[in-house]
Amino acid sequence: MVNNEGNFDWENLSDKGKLEGQLKEELGTWKKNLINRLVESGESPFLQKPNQLSNEFKNSIETQLDEIFLGFSFLTIDEKGHKRQRFFIELCYELDLLINRKACCSIEFEGYAIYTFFKALSSLLDEVEIKIYQDKLYILTMDPLRIVIFEIILVNTTFKFYKESMIGFNLNDLQKALKCKSSDESKINLIFGKDKLYISIKSKKFHSHIERELNCINFHESGKLDIEELHTIKYPCCFKLSKEKLEYLLDNFGLYSEIIKIRCYKDKISFIELGESGNNEISWNSNSISNVFFNPHLLKEEENRSEELNNRKYYEGIYSLDFFNMTYKMANLLDKSELITLSMKEKHPLKSEMIFPKLGDTILKLYISPRG
Image 1 (cartoon, rainbow, N blue to C red):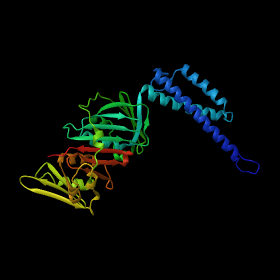
Image 2: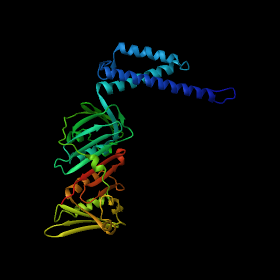
Image 3: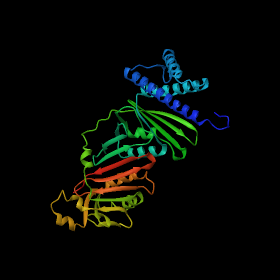
Image 4: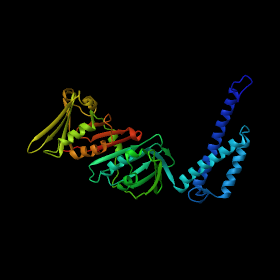
């Protein structure tokens, strides 16, 4: 739009932009209310799956669109046609998602990252129940030997929530359904339906589109896990390990025992293995290990021996070597610069925490009870 001086008519462009915004909001609100009504009533406007609308339903939508467009006279015939086409594409997609697929949420990840995550998890667990909340996917379970508690929060900016639910999966089947290669340069979109997982894999390298489905299973966790109690623990000792250091630790342990003793000093971390035939110790000082935190004064409220606390030189915990093997299997997904945080308190569970930037803000926490 140009005025007599050859410049853009910014005022009219601004007014049109405001009207475009109003139209978008009105169409969005109407579409949302329409979909909610159909989902609540259980009605389906489709003649056949997934996206062929009945003529009666389509005509009623056309009539309503015409009425809405009457209030926006600035629209040209071509603009109305484009907006009508776009509206039907979005409407059909969302109706198929919520009515045919009974979607609870959808989320997208870098393909090889989410595949390797669940592949590693499947080597430690047989089945999981994924709880769908408004802001995350959540897993809370124990390994088959009931040694370690797993707490997993799967989050990404692509997450779209539709309704809360709990959905069970066989992890071996899940990792197979997600299978892809790093060289494929894939994105994986996951739509969690009430009874089925819909998997869409798009490869940037091959310009391909793979569609897979995985049936849910009935999952029954034996016993309720009280994770809230674990969340309240104040850890006086904390340090961070790279996956290379953890691998080095595992390569040099298991010589005399399946038990590891950890001693956390103010400026040093020691891992000790005691056996009938010999001893083994690996230490790192604070110059070679990240973020050593040692603060026994956190426990003053829990202990009356303030004199002992002031003179305390280290804290000690005894744990199963299996825990560190489990941690390492998941840590393999980390880059060199990404660290594992270990938090320790005597006679309390040892906590291992990892964040996976390739999977958005996904967090994994492992808890193991002390030994001895």
